Length: 183
Image 1 (tube, rainbow, N blue to C red):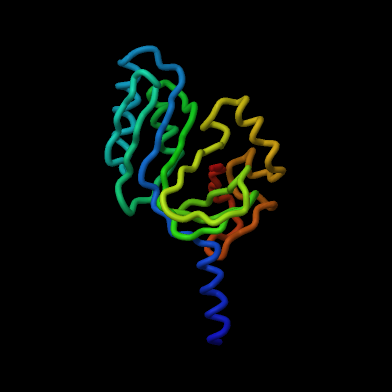
Image 2 (spheres, rainbow, N blue to C red; image 1 turned 90 degrees about the horizontal axis):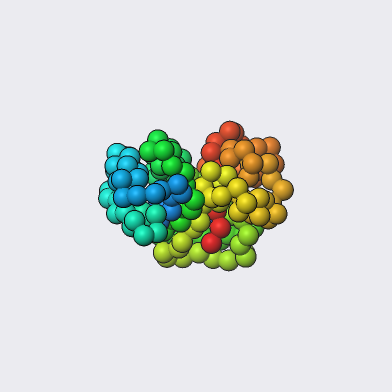
């Protein structure tokens, strides 16, 4: 029995990575003036896990700081931008990651979310790491199509775990949201 518990514990360590998402850099598309930026800023500020937001009118960008120990929902950020009347052109996230092995087409649970790593080399992540969200509504269609060459898994098109997805010890195969990321 002790051996079974030990093996199970090791599997949890391998497949469940402790990560804290601490900030994001968002670039929005469709902005034409400072009022557009202000509209997005006000919309993002209303998200419960957001600590602060700063706008950069020159780049149509936003620096978002997350509250500590909160689960971050990237779809809520996207929705806030869309509710303001614009779209997300790019979302890069800074995460503090504790020793995590990644490889192409691997699903890893981090910070309460399932991440599918694409176009990466097999490696260990440790410390502050920049991840780019590459799902359909987080970058232009042309870039999304380009990224599709790095996987044949259906979850890249649907955004949820499919029958092709490998489940981790703590994440059963269900229609759970999967965020596709690259370094």
